[in-house]
Length: 212
Image 1 (cartoon, rainbow, N blue to C red):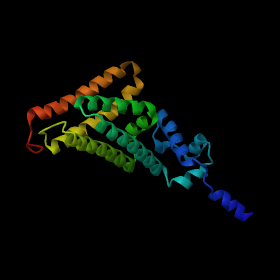
Image 2: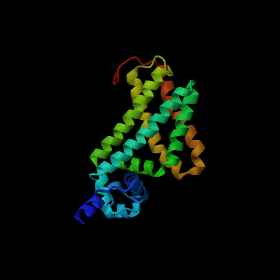
Image 3: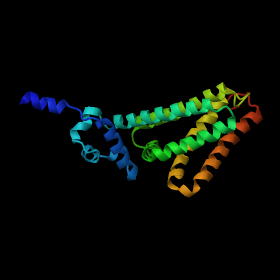
């Protein structure tokens, strides 16, 4: 009997980890942060025994980090593949903006929670989100250099531009999700914003270091 009970307690329900992540997103996207959700409430939303949570995660920070890692990996991989399949700068730019918004539309809870947690209570989660933004910005710089889409612009300047672009588009996804009637306009405005940043850098021919 004891052996049977131990076996039951050690069993991990199939898909439990993903079900908990999705449940946390649904609850947090409504009006709260992930860290305001109770484990019992989370288990109930996921349709799992509350004890299942600790078979997958040590705490809510770890759950949120798993979400961020998955979101970052999926978004970065597809964006990089897409940019390398399109050679014209204008086509790359517009399609990149469109894809980020489309990705947000397919994963609305993740983006709502992500933007909120960027200013949330957990320093660990804030740091992970900032790292995701930095990674996306680094991808932009690397691909811009590789595809020669901003000739003559110093790498430091490209990093400064990319670090402005990613948070802006990240925040614009909320308007895209909440205002369907403005989606086409938001794509145009976001594309124009990025175009002006790069065009300005190219026109200035800035070869000086930051702060000069």
